[in-house]
Image 1 (cartoon, rainbow, N blue to C red):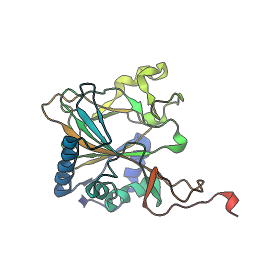
Image 2: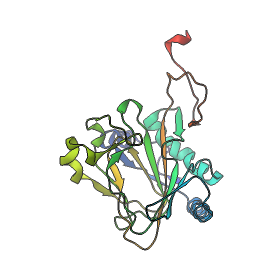
Image 3: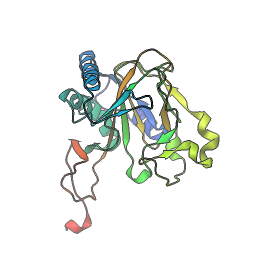
Image 4: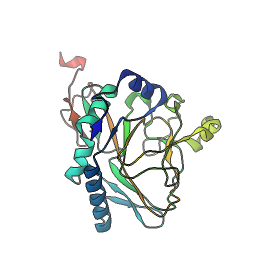
Length: 245
């Protein structure tokens, strides 16, 4: 993996906070990408649980990707990825195991063009990292985002932890403002999980394979020393509640 700079320069961190997304200045090593694709295809062929199928019955998602094989840990814990995240989240970072943490095989005709958020409120946001193991284009269903939409109002209606944009009239005038974000093979896209986003329709004859993960900073007010749904990938799990004194 090659990185232009060891950590995000201030202008890129500022762009992320203002716009809600950032294409990272790095690319996964070709050997890592090749091994990850092979393992995903193998697990999908063997239908290794947990997985999900689309409406046609095709397996399109492998869950618990971090827990499956070492190659996925290498990707999700890679020091250069964490360097970039540290510029946004601080020195103590958790990988969230019960939000995202999956690989997606976006099949021909697959479409879930429905803009949404992944979490309900700004007070416990996550940073989503999408790792593209194949070229992601408009033709094969790249990610679409509405820049700055992380600042839009909150409606408090849950959808697996988030919000469907088309279910709320307050967002109606902005649905058409989404923009495609094509990404090349091996590249990484970060976005604020409160920014409205979706994937496009795959109009090609091939799958588009990617891995999606969620990170956030350690909660300094949570006194639990460990959690089954989170794993420390940088720094430590610290506690700074007033009741410790």
